[in-house]
Image 1 (cartoon, rainbow, N blue to C red):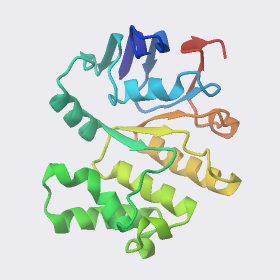
Image 2: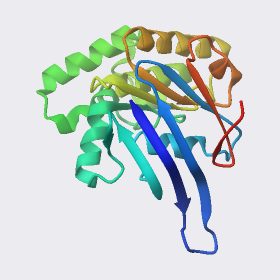
Image 3: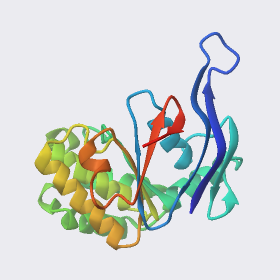
Length: 224
């Protein structure tokens, strides 16, 4: 579904502080499977995730989605592609303080122009599926860590994405909450979604639901 062909990503190119974060990576993320990128801090996991999720452009090489090159698309079309195809779950959740859980879930869908009542109903339904309908009116700062993550998951699902992208999703979770997250990922997989995660947590990349584990080191794919 998603193919990378000899992709590199260089920051501060041509300057004294130039950094090659990704160095000639070629890989395929298969549809309807769970793929995990693992490796130590600084290995390039998060940078590679941003390239696959069309949050950043490669310095060289190509990213293809469903066979079509997307890395050279104008930003307007790339933003539309991200909104329609990907749902993002970030390590720090990135919920907006002072805004209710329900409104946080609704935010990514506002550009689609859906009627507010319909959008609110859909967001509340997602929160209910994650056991959070009773917390819908609470602002982000009054949610527990596990609740904030589930709100972030609901937000990632609001536009009905084909691909769920999660960056170190269990970095701040205890064992019980990690297991809960894995159960949610298993549900995504059963629904036919493609899931891509970065993690240095063996509870993630050793989980039976992980179809493919890709090891990175120094910006390159390494032996597992």
